[in-house]
Image (cartoon, rainbow, N blue to C red; front, side, top):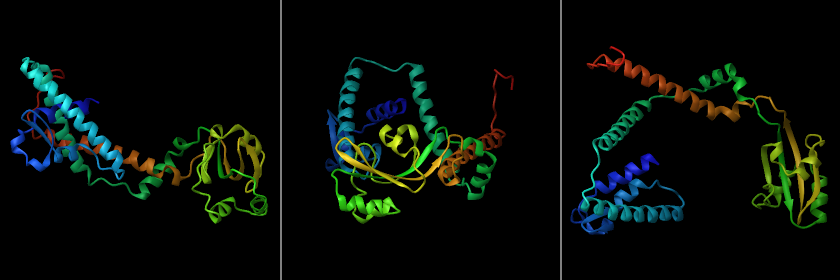
Length: 271
């Protein structure tokens, strides 16, 4: 929020006069101050969802208009920032420049698969499950269809049935249709959990009648609380950790190397 407020303030304070912006690029105007389409595009991240994009732009422009009206009125009333407030703005500007500088340097940082694997082996205790999990496939059918139910009872794969009849896109508020991956036990509907609690692996359980429909569940695997996640589940988490660690080390080394080029006095430490 602090960053957003700063950006808004800077946009308002730095808006050029309307006659300096090509007319076809003017999105909004308050007296002689104008907001260009380029500024709006820079401020709003590009989403593939055009409806979301348009909504964000409408809100941004409305906020700019409101803030600009208040800003101009504040200037009329001779409202000024204190030295401390100006210092805060300058500090934030410096932080932005520093982050941009560090981001450019950090582009050279990479994490190899070997580093990820080594970290996983040495720190596997960090990746233990806090809850028991069950790997499930699920199918919801709103109406009883005897031929389908018979086919399911004779099948060894619920997912194959789901794909065969294109039922993977059918949403349901209890569980989605398809391979659900590993799910924490406490998040599963109690009625379903009770029915599958003693089911052997690969067994298709059902039909289970809940509300206005029928459910089929196939238990693919179980993992107890305290077991370790496979590397594939935590690989990207480890990569992010190592990237953060490497960046911190890079920044520390950079500061130490650069400090020798500057005259630095810190009276609090006596150095």
